[in-house]
Amino acid sequence: MTEMDHFGVKSKLASVFVLLLVIFFYLTLLWSYKDQIPKITLNVLSLGMLGLSILLAAFIAVLGGIIWLFLLRDHKVFVKSNAVISMFAVSQFGKYLPGNFGQHVGRVLLAKRAGISIPITLNTMIVEMMWGLASGGGLALISIFFFVDPNDLGAHSIPGGYELIPIITLLLALPWIGIYFVNTFFPGLAKLLTKNDLIPLPKVSTAIIVTTLFISSFFIMGLILKLQAQCFFGVTKGNVFQLTCLFSIAWLAGYLVPGAPAGVGVREAMMVLLLSPVLGAGTAVGLGITLRVTTTVGDAVAFMLGVAMRKLHSHLFISNLS
Image (cartoon, rainbow, N blue to C red):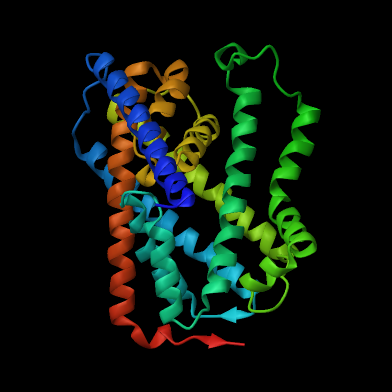
């Protein structure tokens, strides 16, 4: 076994260790607060709210497909919108596979079958991830500024309002900065990602649309949290904006921890820490469970919708590339 192979094995073992440690931490929290978790009130209203939450979670996958559609168009790749949304929705369910990379592999394969080159797919996925992290990071900074006690972070101070604006602006400009950096200092890599050309900078209109859709997705999650806290557990504290910003921190943690399928365990543990001061520990733990069920079923609904679209409208999956 080569030195590189040894490094790869050690990295995987480290990722698994971190994942297991976080899941163990969350299960410990779950056990500690099991008696404080309010009982879910099952009635017509709560069941209807559960159905609405699942549909909202599935709609987030549709927004993800639209984001990818606009990024593809910046590369002069014009595929039917139905096809792009379907490919995104189907591939996203792969995030529940161990390793948290199945969704990326699945999208590359589906896109290739639709006539989209692998370099372009990879390029748009990288930009998409950068903008997702930038949008989540911006909301997380707002959360730290307005809603998190700096003592809980072990810090003596947090950024002021005037400091926050340029930081968030810099975050949202991250894709442009990253692309410019690659084109300037690593032109060989840029040509590899775009079939012998430099990576095109996203249009301003694309940036506005993509940022708006990403932030809308976060707000939908905040709305789901608000609805479930109120209808399932009878807790009315916390507004949608506050819950959205706090959730963004938990999402970032689940997204960035390697090896966690769909952020399982990581997101829930952070939700307990962040939402407990607002909603109470028991409700925060309960929401971690109900939100995980909601998003998993929502992703399954989006997956089935994507499969149905592919079967019922196969004629829409003919690429029109230019």
